[in-house]
Length: 365
Image 1 (tube, one colour):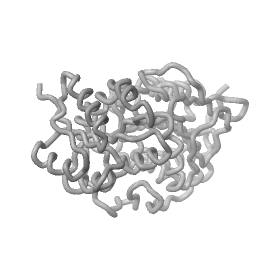
Image 2 (cartoon, one colour; image 1 turned 135 degrees about the vertical axis):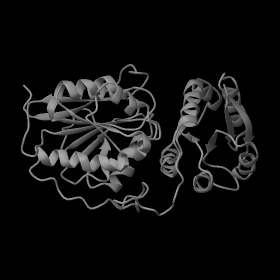
Image 3 (tube, rainbow, N blue to C red; image 1 turned 180 degrees about the horizontal axis):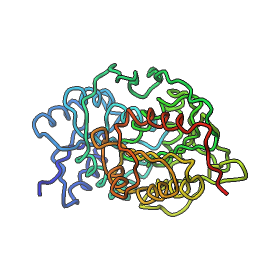
Image 4 (tube, one colour; image 1 turned 90 degrees about the vertical axis):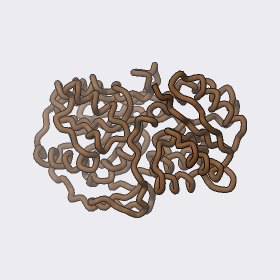
């Protein structure tokens, strides 16, 4: 089997060496080059034609984001960002995902050597996923048919008419992993201000979800924030599972509440889509609408089938618009999805479904 070829781009000789060691220890990949800055990397990419590159953000001679933007415009290829666990690192990483990076590794600020060694499994898995991912050419300033461009303060949300006469019983549940930051943005930016509450589990480590929620909040008509334990779920609001915690829904009288809990990983993830979707099936039932977006693995597939069995209406993202078709494919294979749609059509279909059932709700006893 052909090994995955990787070029490491980082201004730190220590990090370059550590990443190269980690890559070369894997049976299915090899480090074919290491560059100290993007200009050196550019020549390596031309001559060595790697399958994946790992890319640091803060480097001499050319900023990592500038290099990434040029790369995705001129020679799109799978990129895994190497970020720092800081607020600045989180913001830059989200911008990199917007520009087309497949995923990221969060390296610690101190104890980098031990920290990266402890992350060996995650680093290898992210490189494997990136090698199989669908990458697309970046076309700056080009909006799609609905007027949505990239994530960021300048990206306008498209005009969406209110749903009207909407039952507050309804809740939308979204699960996503690799590629999901942009896919979730595509869905949320198209929802009207009177959308039902939205609960989101996106596989993301601690320290990144707050910045992610803030970026989405600047783009959408609905309010977006990290979920807080015990808060009431309100229409026109989206709640994102904090990194490192599971998110679920609970009923208290006439209200739905968010539950944010620590605990063991489920399907190797924390937060886990399985935890959120299982609670949706158990607590919300026929008043739930489920959405499975791009991501590697099968997290949430079984619980999404439970949602359907409990009366939920479910949509899976189609393969053509996914960065990685793992999670939607597994949901479809489990018989969990009523429909399979491109990501740009999911919000519109949710709105149609909500309008067709406006004024109708089922009370769970």
